[in-house]
Image (cartoon, rainbow, N blue to C red):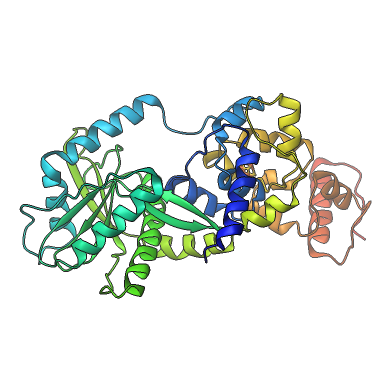
Length: 380
Ligand code: SF4
């Protein structure tokens, strides 16, 4: 639910202070949102992303530069491939949508490609919504929205998202198109990369559903947002486009649930000390104190999803936190949260012997001692 205007203004002001004077906000993209939803309990990531902090610059200023993100070469290659797919008014892209998702419709010819330019993300979002409405109300034609702008409410703040394309079918339904530069070999691509693309597309589907709901509220016919998206990739080792329909129902449900659980950014901002600022221009010690003032929930999965992973891993290791060993081990250790607690419980120096985690640790320590021929301390 959107915030009342005055509260929204106060929050935006507070977030700008957190970012630092004259530091522009870094827009959240669907890739970041999908990763954010993968670690919904991390308050640190939630506030940094919510405030639009550039985490790559922040990680560098903290002395733990991230090894995360796309290389310049990959970005250039991806942009060139996308331009090829969308050439000639998106003829090839629309042909692929027709072939993979809507064979019963008339083949696309003379599709509309509306101009979506407007000032600022809010203006582009409104222009996109208008174009979607007009296309939906004119059935029987294909419409290609090239880089539309969508807004998704995330923990009380709008995140502006820019899918590669959205296609409106002749029956008025909407399809998300994702264009990636990783190859599809013999009709299939790297499952990890397809999974990441599906999670990203699911975020766009959620954002489109918000647009559809608003259109319906304003009296327009209810459009269908398709849950099968089109993934377009280079074919084999060429740069010819090929495509596959990907069902994102599961990713949509999981991401929607996790985004709804995200701790409200406003609540986190209220707990921070006055004057907290994450500007990368600050001295490292001051910046470290600011970052450490927000609790984090590090897990090894952060290494492939968050720019601050090296910083958080180092802090987590220093604290001896068992989360560095992985979420499943953390869950099995119950109330034992540090390596010190675990070793002490295993050696019978602390812990409740009735606790299944403590009992299992003592049994494991006993077996290890027996195997190594060490003096065995019987389990209590
Ligand atoms: S790396 Fe740190 S800030 Fe990022 S999600 Fe993990 S714990 Fe949170």
